[in-house]
Amino acid sequence: MPKTTTQGDTPDSVPAPVYQLRIDLRHLKPPIWRRVLVPGGITLYKLHQIIQVVMPWADYHLYEFSSGGERFGDPSDDDWEPSRSARRYRLNQMVSEGQKLAYVYDFGDYWEHEIKVEKVLPAEPGVRYPVCIAGKRACPPEDCGGPWGYPDLLAALADPKHEEHDSMLEWVGGEFDSEAFDLESINAGLRAIKVKT
Image (cartoon, rainbow, N blue to C red):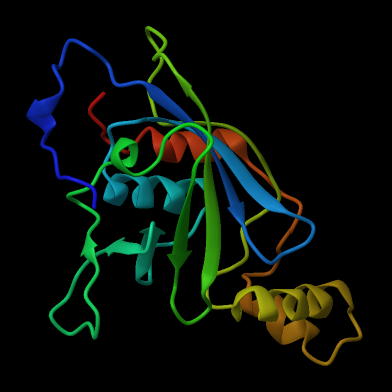
């Protein structure tokens, strides 16, 4: 079982190594993914916030990480099987280079993500982390039915003769480009996330 640590466990003068993560949204083709650099010492809760920005999701729903049979999220007394607190465990406690971590967002739509540590790198002087360095395709809209409903949404949007075309177009706000990926906008959002390095 991972042990808890506090911010004081790492001297402030030594920046934590940087983890290069590949985040893949599972069960969809063509693939939707992001590559992001984060301090290895961030909590899983902070990683949750980062994922919400880089995909981007809107953080309307519950989430959960899992690794080695353990679950991490925001525990509640109402949970049948409470998870461990994501605020008390750090990324570098859970995984190292080449290892993977699972993340689920929205237990209704059940968006599964695979997070792989591609590399562990030294922090570069003058670089502010986290930062997204690559990605492909737009994240599906919230509440569109998960990986099973999303293809139906795309089919309705692509066909003006589809019986649900107009209602789905209105539902997504008038337009939706499934191939769009806006790196600049994502990194603007990441700059609002405060992390200790």
